[in-house]
Image (cartoon, rainbow, N blue to C red; front, side):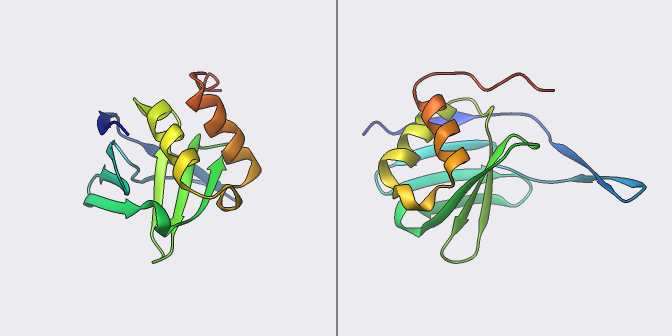
Amino acid sequence: MRLEKFSHKRSCLLSAAFGHESHVAPDSYVTSFRIVRDGMRFRVPPKGHGYVKWEEVQAVSFSEPLGWFVIQTSDGRTIRVTSRLYGMENMAEALLANVPRSHFDSRAHSVLADRASGHSPAPSR
């Protein structure tokens, strides 16, 4: 397996509506990653760096409205990865090859399979 590093330099602001109020809150997600033999190293500003072993991944879901993958780990961490991350094709291939199929929800698996085959994400709405 090739070890690769990719990055995505973009800030993210989430806008969420609660009742009649509208709130804008900063959130964080993976901005760069490196696939290694037994897992993935990643950077999540402002928190810093992280590492997850493939065997620690318990669930992978896809948030359609936000356009990101949510990776849950066995130690309770939540790792968010935008579907527009540069190099996402390589991350998709690595996740599909190293995480059991039963750990993916059907939409996440479908979108990752599309990305692994080189399809671009759908345009933003």
